[in-house]
Length: 211
Image 1 (spheres, one colour):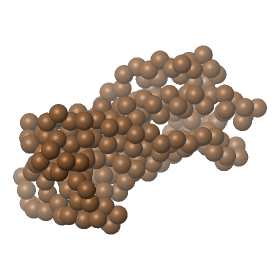
Image 2 (tube, rainbow, N blue to C red; image 1 turned 30 degrees about the horizontal axis):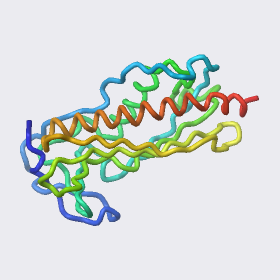
Image 3 (cartoon, rainbow, N blue to C red; image 1 turned 135 degrees about the vertical axis):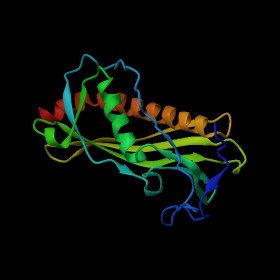
């Protein structure tokens, strides 16, 4: 596995613009993925009447949305050199969301924009943080932080049924790319599992809105 200390970036304030990689003529990058599988979920609301949920376009933190693996340390940000996601992180996250709902036996059934007929609610996700955070400096092992804001909206009157922020932190034992990628995978699965369970838990509120 490749040490993650080899970072290509410029220091910047995280509130300003996106990150950029140096040395664009570097050799081809090693490609990684996350969220490729979702464990079957057994919802506490499995007996509730099913309802359809339209997936809105997922918002994603700009610096992390592409295919480069974002890391931060204080006010500095960097991408891991020689390593990329196999597809943009925003695309992989959407695919993981679909798998998480498909693996769930609860009442909430996720549908796409083309299947809008009959949808009871809309689920909006905003991935606010998706990074390997080096709180102890670049030489320490990082913690993977994934934070997602979820909003469920009644499609009949555009009323917000509920909103909640979910966060997962996965400590990495060693500063190596393979372990960092596994941390992103675990954090993504954890956050999405809780979002699915939370959405299932809105069955009564959705039914009341429809009634």
